[in-house]
Image 1: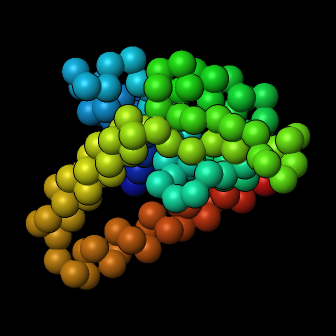
Image 2: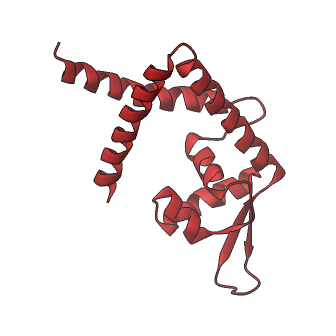
Length: 146
């Protein structure tokens, strides 16, 4: 098999495996019913001060309608608070509940463990090559997104 076919197969399998494993890793007894999409919204909201919905939608590259559906679900599940801005009642602000903060931390630990396992046996040179290759991959996808 030629190298381009091998790389294509590796990338396709990598993306599929990451999605599958991430979904299983976040589905614990404590966080039943949470999806990978939910966790990505939680990450975009972050641990800091409340953010307006449009800022979160832009960070996720989704429409306000799509984000509204996700936030409604996360509010019902107890992960997100939604309030109207005092300065401008048209603006909706979102922030994480304590449960949302716990889910954020749980997901952060998963990623930390994943990176530790991936780079644990690599030399500094191999880590730099991997980093460079992944950076190029990200640039490719960002160009396609716009």
